[in-house]
Image (cartoon, rainbow, N blue to C red; front, side, top):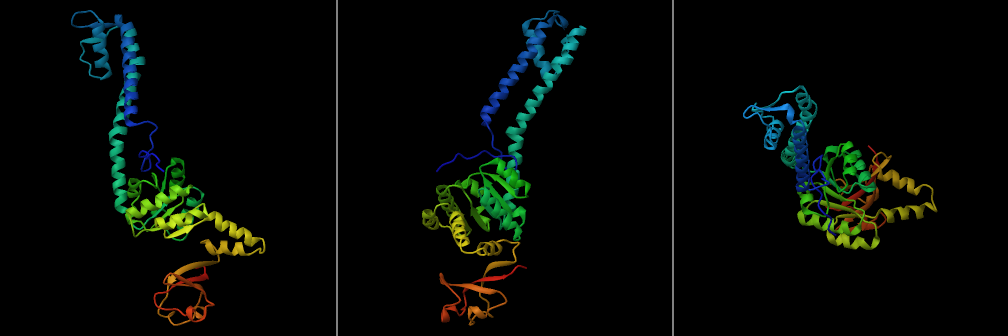
Length: 339
């Protein structure tokens, strides 16, 4: 799925409603109209002008006087001499002259200076992006993931949100995150986000086909970054895993499990919610086995509760007898009180 690349915007990038060429043509047309208006004003009030050379005011003289007036050169060879001509120059021509100069300055800023400043800001940002978190898609899942990551200790300035919606990026910026207008399926946008130096990439896109393409693109740019992907349809989990995601979350499926459990219990969903939240009473962590853990059954390890052991990709429960004795290199899932 190909989505047109957005144009660079105001926080770091700006999406323009028109291309630079279209914008330039529109401003040229406006300048031409304003110059023509000034010329018309001088032509209808030419009796109030005096040519110091031959004393006559022709159409060429009016065009010439318009040019030197608008450009504020003023050689003094043609001057307004009547009170009405001077009043017209003051009240009508001078404001138009100021508007013309503002158009010139605005065009120079938008087409030259602004792009240089944005490029400089982007370059400086990329130099500082190290070990940051990239969130692709700032919908409900992306926003919740960003808030939870910050609650767990990630600095807001280390969270970079990549989205195609400027409105969502504005909301992200209010929370102190870095907003980057771009598409998670485009290599250049991911490179601008510093995917090669990121700690992790969270893909929270609304469509699974876009999510698969985003995972493939991230993996092509970086083999080491950790990729966590949200998936809507269960049938797409296998595709996203094959694309290279390290972890896959299916919110609709998980919520379905919790809803089914809630039919028989009033407390399971509350406990799972407590376990997952950073402000809950308990937390679930993953840690490597220490020297003090090796050789001991999972049940005897404290002060937390070891609920699962991962060894060579296999998941081992605390009830599995000899297999539940911790070995060097094991990963432990531990429930412990929230600090």
